Image 1: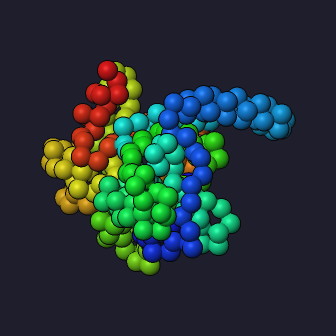
Image 2: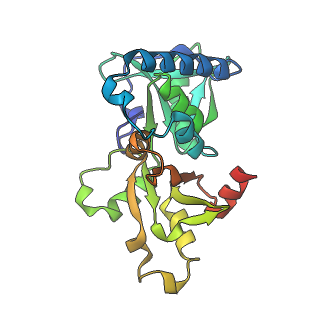
Image 3: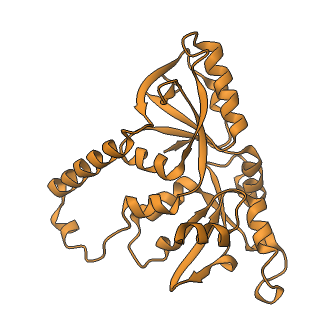
Length: 258
């Protein structure tokens, strides 16, 4: 997944907006199953002896995708429910633009309608969940995230050393919010600093040090996903669970475990 920090891709549109058929509809499951089989076969063919001796398996793509369930981003599709893609800066490839704020997707839609007569009355903003996005990324489809600029500002305040900009989609975590339920450990990761601060405000004073912000660790979604992919089972990375904006971790965990 590609990300350009807080720069707005809408300001650097290349000379055209065009369509490429990337189905979001009923054929999604079939394509993902075919891709999984192809990737499994390729992995089997290319497996080196060094890898064959590995005793501990890494987290699979299904596990990583499951941790992202429930969080939606927004993009623009045509009347056939196909992604409207944009070309990158040098026009070498086409990418999907995924917005964390619906209003940014609406701005993208306005750009599409102004530049493409064919899509003027056919394009619309649609949601897609991050677990679907992740599996499409596994399939080899390129995306660029457009983060919430408010959360970029929040991330920079927590990491003053990165004053020049924040690379990626900010995510926030605190060890004070790790919970156990039914013998399973959950380490919630938030897309909103305001949400995690609200959760920390509920933590008993005896279990925390003064200053909620001191308990918050900020990172990028892209980096966290890469680390999860490379991590072994029972390493702690499998405990991560991404909390949809506006929800508490207790509410989200209850929903996905019912």
